[in-house]
Every structure is written in C-alpha cells, then in structure tokens.
Length: 161
Image 1 (tube, helix red, strand yellow):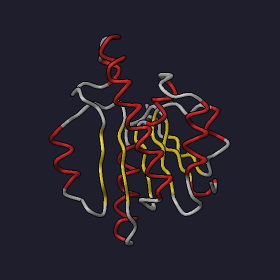
Image 2 (cartoon, rainbow, N blue to C red):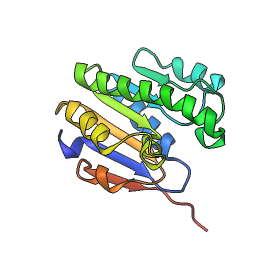
Image 3 (cartoon, one colour):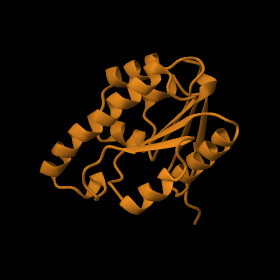
Image 4 (cartoon, rainbow, N blue to C red):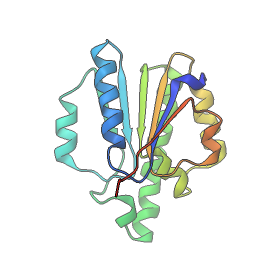
C-alpha cells in the first residue's frame, strides 16, 4: 500500500464526511469508481436515498440495522450492531482484495478503533489487502497510532471558538 494514497480526515469539528464526499464527487467526475462504506452513524433512509442517486459512479453502503448512532445504543444493542459492523469491515476488505474501486471511503472508520470494534491485526489485514492503485480515505474523530504507519495525509478539522 502506497502511503500517498491513504488520507485521514479527523478531529472534533464538523465536515469530515463532507470533505470525503467532495473528494468522491471529484474522483467520480474524473471517471473513477468510488465506494463509500459508512460505520457507526445508524441507518438514515433519507440520506441513503439521496446518495444512491449518485450510483453507479459512487456506491454507498451502510451495514447498520438500527437508525440510532452507535453511541446512542444500549450495551446489548451495541453487541448486536457489532456483528453488522464486522460485516461492513469484511466487505471493505473484500472490496480492496478484488480491486472493485479506485477510491474507497471508510466513513467513521476511526470510531471502530476508538470503540475497540477492530484490532490492530484487523487493520493490518485491511491495509495489506489494498493494491497500489486504490486510494483510501478514513474519517472519524480520533486517529489511533496504529494507523499512522499507513497514512500519507492527515487533515485535522476542529471547531473554532
């Protein structure tokens, strides 16, 4: 995996997903295939309907079964949702192995690490599955140290007071 092809949008400010979506639109406009997999944000049908209008150039996936954000779920609901998250993670790895897209955006992926839903071995297997031709964008609030060795660019987005 080429570090220059891996970008992170992180921080406590709003706009990380928006920045990644803007990059996706630009890439699709240049003829690239884009896949976006969103984690931890729940299943908001209105948003999904709108984003599906961008297909086939930009494909959008959520594996969440509940409409609530992960943080709003009870412990029992989080355990159930963790299975769906694992399915999304495995799908992301499959996308990288098969080379289905030239840009893969893993929205709120950093939260998987923060919530201990993936391990360092999981991260390594994901990154080792990527070809030199695939760009990857991760978004989320906090970037863990384990990811740093794979990253070429980091954009920190913070709230201004």
